[in-house]
Length: 229
Length: 406
Ligand SMILES: Nc1ncnc2c1ncn2[C@@H]1O[C@H](COP(=O)(O)OP(=O)(O)O)[C@@H](O)[C@H]1O
Ligand SMILES: [Mg+2]
Image 1 (cartoon, chains in turn red, green):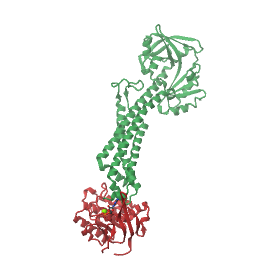
Image 2 (cartoon, chains in turn purple, brown):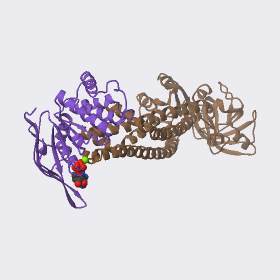
Image 3 (tube, chains in turn cyan, red):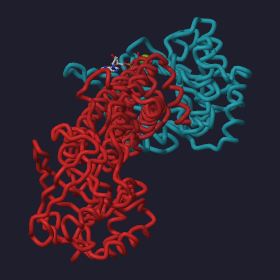
Image 4 (tube, protein in one colour):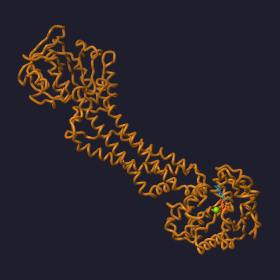
């Protein structure tokens, strides 16, 4: 599984301004992710997991440090180019309620391909395939409010993976699910990872979830602790 | 997809959208109806005004209207009338002689405007025949008859069959007088005409004034009011401006148009008010929906949706909402306009102030296309413009902030 790294992060730091106080969220974080890995970012609440994922996803910019994705330097990209980067290279899965409520499961997944400017015929095939691989065949026309939390998250997985992004970021995707459903979701992600070679980086503070990861980065107060394999 | 998204988002909060929709459509309905009322009344007013006496166009020898010099006549008028009849827009032409005169009976006397007309053509140009309330109109051949206003007859204390004496200055400057039999009385509703104008046969007046077979004025009625300026222009080639003046009823009575414009100002103010209400309604609805969907916009942005696409989505949503309201407003407003355009609104029971002699007591609503489109267009554009601010709010949003607590 270990080939060339698709993500290289060096000396990443980020702090927030809160009432004129600087709150460090990430301190000098360096890491590497290889194609096809299944990586957990673990750490207690407030340790900087979301901040790290947002930086990797190009939704936010660091104070210092470098993020190379397929040798493209995110930190020097214009806002517009970061949007294009997010469109094509990143798949996002959020905690919950991240689907567009007025769109069906099919359309939610399709939206991701619309952004990638794919033609209708291609979209149709890819969306059906993606929904099938997350086990939601037959629920294509359901609206989010007609699905359970677990089903909604699976639509989110399908939406993130469709159109083959370089990697998928999932910020505590199981936080709002019960234990069983959460583990099922991670197992589903793991299957997608193994069968289709999609790279996953997900954050969590749940030990049962962490144990499913191929590799884990531990964050504490914004710093990486010795990594465990 | 953007259209689908916008459309579905409208129905996401059905109640709010319906309230917004009804505000737009109701405002527009009322507006269109009021325009229909105003336009209908004005149309009738102009129509009446034209057909009571002025006609659409009048031709005089240059300088006549200013000086009222009776010697400024139109020679060879028969030939000219014939040429005017040749214009496809012309319905009829009435040649007239005008003269100031004094009318006397044994007990009373009064100054009047004396009109010499050809009965056959005059009744095609004006509604004088309709206004005859007692007796009859002038005979086609000159028989020494006169037709006067009913009010005037009462003032003079004469009735049908009796005679009145007319004194005026003849063509050569000498005093001219004659005695004429009152053949009929009329009531037009316009005081200046009912009290101040009398009608005789053209020939009768020519004899009274000992003038040649010439006239002062050619009054023209067109088939429709819409070709006024074009027709005037076409006629100016036959009646060169060095010798003749061609005037439209608007030139002759600018007051009428000014009156209509003054009336319309009130409607434009109502348009403004409706527009402001619609704008506030749309802005409020769009602000609410934008604030509710902050997180959603954050996710869309995170996925790589461009700010301008979000902007477009919101504007599209507002445009659809406003368009729906506008269409509903047009349908209801126009329906109401056509309904009351057919049945009329009888105002006589409510107030005599409405019983304007030019517009009558029954108003037939008839909104002009211009005012209909203008109102609908302005409301529609206002709807879109007022969603720009909410849309910008959504665009300004930073995706990180919005999804922070997802
Ligand atoms: N917008 C912000 N303003 C101020 N402080 C923030 C902001 N976002 C995050 N932080 C702080 O940064 C730290 C890391 O937060 P976060 O990355 O959300 O951690 P995690 O996802 O591991 O819970 C926390 O101390 C948090 O309070
Ligand atoms: Mg977090």
